[in-house]
Length: 140
Image 1 (cartoon, rainbow, N blue to C red):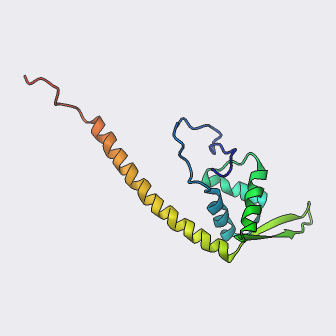
Image 2: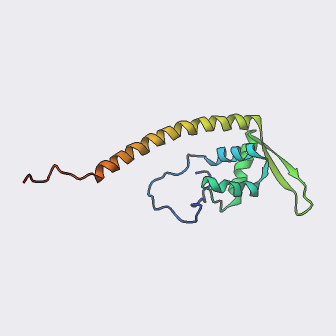
Image 3: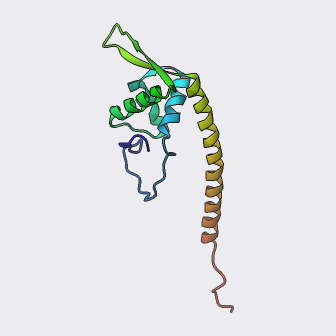
């Protein structure tokens, strides 16, 4: 995942030995979505990433991603002066960023169907495993 120091939102580590989790680079469409909702500064974005399963332990990773996305013209940034505290860089999504956001939404929609199919088959397998096996019982 893009943010290397990510743990579960509740602070626990998963017992799963799989490499699952969010899709690769999932932080990028999450950031684009958040910025499409409203321009924001880095620390605000870090807080707003939590519902997507991100617990950012190293803010530098978020800022690095934001700089990369700005270099790709997916977002812009401007300094916002504050009456209280230092100036902050505020990020805004661009038209290219919105295009990529739409592409990510389509890809995630397709992946959701694949995951739904997988889970339905898994549940059916589990249901069959719970059924009693009468084939080995002796006839009386």
